[in-house]
Length: 250
Ligand code: 1GP
Image 1 (tube, helix red, strand yellow):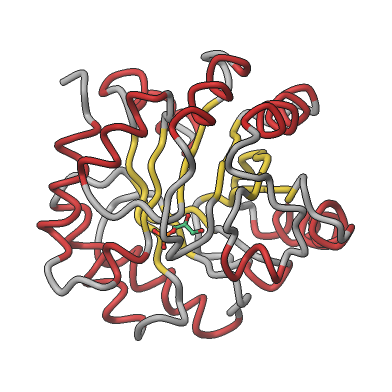
Image 2 (spheres, rainbow, N blue to C red; image 1 turned 90 degrees about the vertical axis):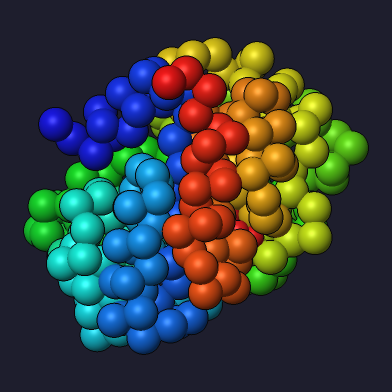
C-alpha cells in the first residue's frame, strides 16, 4: 500500500490523521529517532521530516534513517527546496507554494527535485502549499503573498486552483511556531469548496488537543504539529492528547 493510500485509509477510518514534524536542525538524529518512537507509541500516523531553513545532506539522511529504525511509521519528506530530499524516506510531499512570488518555490525546485525523486524511487504526493498570515520563517523564505486571516475566500481560491491543477493534498500553513493557527472559518470554507476527494492538512501554531479537535471539526483531515512536540520532553503525552481529540471515529 502506498503512503498516500495509507493516510487516506486512516482519515476514512478514524476521522483524521496526525503527523508529527521533525526538523533535522532541531535535534540530533538519535533524539529524532526516540521522538518518533514515542510519537508512534502514542498514536501518531506518520513522521514528516523537513524545515524552512532547508537543512539537507548528511544530517537529513541520518535523521530519516534514525526515524526509520525507531518505528514503522511512514516517513514523509517536507522539503523547503531541492536539498530536502533523502533516499531513505518513504514519500515526499511534492509541493508547490502556490502563493509565492518566487518561481523557485512554485516550479523550479520541483523540476530539479523531480529527477531525484524518480532516481531514488520516493513516492511523490502532490500537494498545494498555501501560506496564511503570519507565515513565520517559511513565509519569509518562500517570499509568499500571505493570505490575510480575514480573507477566507482567497484561501478558497488558491485551494481550488490546487485541486484543479491535480493536487490531491492541500496544506494551509500559518508558519511554524505561529501565535495563532489558521482560522477555523477559513478551514471550513476551504474544505467545503474542495470536497472529500482532496485531503486538507492544517499546520502552524497548533499546540494542544483542544485546538486540534476544533480544527478537525472545522474540516481538516490531517493535523501537523512540530513545535508543540519538539518543545516537550514528554512526547508521548502531547501526541496522545492530540490523537485522542482528533480521532473522532474510533
Ligand atoms: C510547520 O505547520 C508546521 O510547517 C508545524 O508548525 O511548529 O507551529 O507546530 P508548528
